[in-house]
Length: 134
Image 1 (cartoon, rainbow, N blue to C red):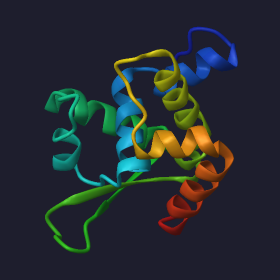
Image 2: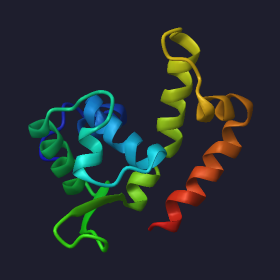
Image 3: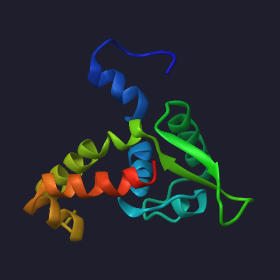
Image 4: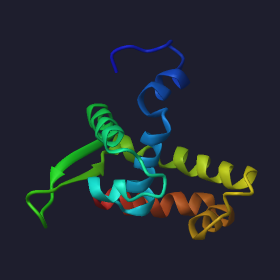
């Protein structure tokens, strides 16, 4: 990032991934196994294609994502998390847990129930899954 609002660590972090779309893209890769542009477009939040292109570029420039050619289809790109991106896992889990706890319209699904029962175990499980791809 070129310009930061302040030298506060929270502000600096928000400069990188503080918009809702970036966190939803990270969620999709991290927790839902999505890898491609077309898969991100199919997410329930309905991100606009121009915003998706922008956010993928920002996340790649920040070293959170890596873009590579798909081994299955050489005309398609896939995205994966870097170690820096994987390090966001506990934050994503905490945001998810907080949202389920305080918003009745966001019920706990399978992962949410696992987090409520054993948050540390869920984080460990996802770290192992994510690091297999790095």
